[in-house]
Length: 388
Ligand SMILES: Cc1ncc(COP(=O)(O)O)c(C=O)c1O
Image (cartoon, rainbow, N blue to C red; front, top):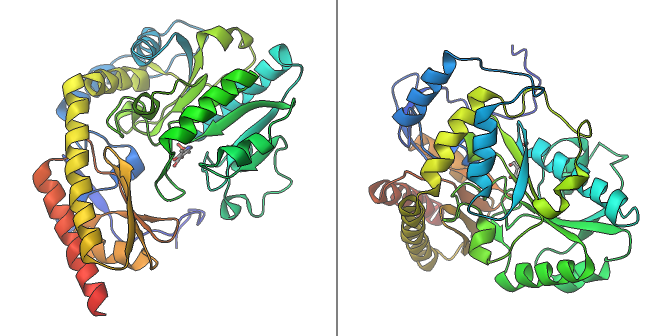
């Protein structure tokens, strides 16, 4: 009997330790982790620079009220913003909270600067979180079902279809919110033209562009943030998941030009930006920002992509291979739940999203030999399926 509410259906495996990209269960069996706690553990497990940093911070105050100055919070905000564009940061504890703050800040902007405009255009098949506002912004029926009446003020357009978006533009629209790559929706990258033209059109109309980089951010796509690779600058973007290497964090980054709509008392979080988490996150972001590290992600990403494209050539039930950097989806013509279970039995952790997409989010420290190993396990499984 479990005392936990059954919000998850869980696998029967229990992990008790980890090192690098490997996890070990209670029987000592080794698993190669190509999911990283859903894009969180970018340095794998027991990464000594992070462990040492955490040990040092453990002796200091873990938590301080946000009524006081917190140096690591200031430094982390600077570290995120400095190479991007002039901006200010709000820290919270998760991706949903980071998006919730982005939604609230956009509404404040609408009230103060855009005649009360409040609508936010969001994409079909998107995922922005599990709070009521972010569920309302999520373009997936299965996520929204059972929770109406939903939060008003969101309208949906077809992802990668600018005409469908422009059809919904009105004086009431304050912002557009999209993921550069739809992660939960099945690893679907925004087309370069779509995102570029979206930026042009929103700028022309004084509509804010909010990018949800919760899954794509912090090096995952081979840039610090995916929008850099697209050559597009948002007005607001959000970051979470990998930002503190496995500790809970959310960040909402707001362009300096609009940041004055946020004033004391309009938003807050007890734990957001605490010294323990932001101290570890500082260590994470400094390492990820290293151009050599990012070049390594791009190189290994291309290596993985080539291997996956080879799989596509070999198996007719592989429909498409898509992604960027070290974020990949293998779209199948069949459901993939069973494949994930069988992969786990072989010691490989992957995930199935949008029913037919095997999603790969290895830690960014993964090595080519480990990529070889993961792909050869997937190939074995695909061969078995073909024979079934
Ligand atoms: C793009 C995106 N936004 C928001 C979220 C929600 O993040 P969290 O689960 O940390 O609230 C996720 C989580 O998968 C995500 O992928």
